[in-house]
Image (cartoon, rainbow, N blue to C red):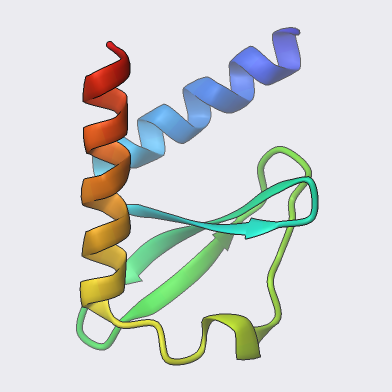
Length: 81
């Protein structure tokens, strides 16, 4: 459990600095950091199972997609708390 707590803390700290994008993959999700908004550059974050999605899966993702995902996650967190 200590590993999971450290992973959650790391992801929370990263989310305070930059937006994170989650792509459903495998039995969890692949986590990407928004490295740059213009042009949109996503950087893989090696946490949890370290899932990565193929480039073709994320090609075409726009900043609007990222913002929509980010807003949905924030709304879900607010409704749970």
